[in-house]
Image 1 (cartoon, rainbow, N blue to C red):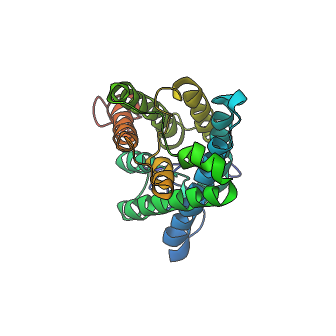
Image 2 (cartoon, rainbow, N blue to C red):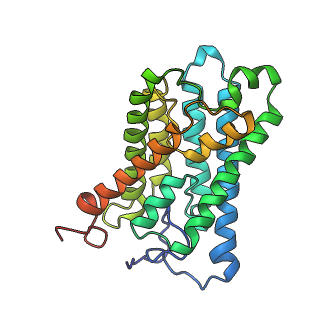
Length: 259
């Protein structure tokens, strides 16, 4: 997939360096093509999970879901905008899988990206534990997702994770990968989607949409109750968004049928 770019145009692309869609401004060396993007994914995921966990652990009861929603959304928007030109700013395993399946990155970076995101999740959760008080940390289970307490809640929560992750992944793919709808405001768009999905669905599932965000706090706090929901739901939602883009919503270069 080719992309043209006028002189001086600035584009925020959530794709990996080396992508067939990324503009070639200068030849990248091995460090810039492989190691630097992986480090950016590690650092970006670490700070996103750190800030997100702290917002939950130190959340004032009077603010409800507003504080975590704003912190997660604004944090991801800023970090994405800063690191997009280095790694593509995925910070989320379903995003990486969806971008790869839509032709936005090379296969050799998929596994390293996923590993860096999970390690970043653990580092961010550990940083949050070191910063917050023991009382607040214990009360919030280390910002692990603890909304689900019974089997009767699982079906609704799983559906919510699938639907909300599908939405945010679709925003990502259409805003950053699909050439016809690509938009330089995609960091802001993704951040806003995080905010309103947490406000809408936080009481149902906690609105994870990111296995790395769920995995890190679960490891550090050793809280695994219904943890599988936060893997199955987001991954299924990301794959569903990929199918929608590849079959129906993508441009001719991405769409597999009806060209």
